[in-house]
Image 1 (cartoon, rainbow, N blue to C red):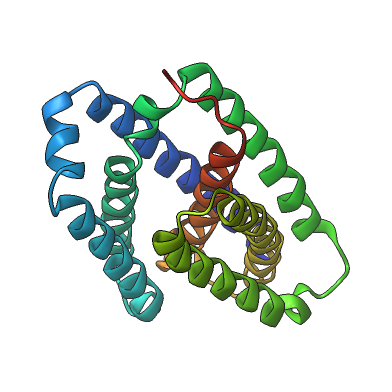
Image 2 (image 1 turned 180 degrees about the vertical axis):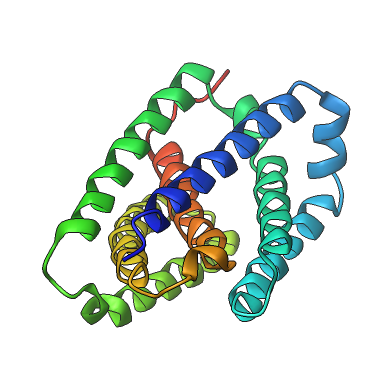
Length: 215
């Protein structure tokens, strides 16, 4: 068993979160940068680029060089920082920090559940996928309805889905540690990306639910 796989995935998760939040905060200090990102097509371009990078990592992880995977991962986390940089304008910094700590606590609890539970969480994969699809559909619908109630429900569902994915992904990584030589491949970076996506989505949904707006 490779005991370093899960710690390394968490190390890259930490690096990714550091890039995202430091990068996002720095960008938020530059009004012209914010205007360029959110006032035109750049936000959409960055969002599409994130999806493309995630798909490339998912589809090519078995054949990709680890150095290439690291570059793509860093690029993904940096782009995410750009696309969420507006939170540092929309919410109080103290509120962002508190929500981040709450997210870390929730994430840690369900990561431990995924690591130590004897229940095979692959049984819940279908339900998690259905929940994820429901979140995406509701988000799209609410673009047109602009309903605060629907937005609140979508955020709550999103938190439930992604804490479920956190436990699921950690268990999968723990099981993958049994594969010889996996640490030398691109899989640790891909696993870190999965955990990163879980964390950021939990954080953003909690921030939308409980964050204090910066007037």
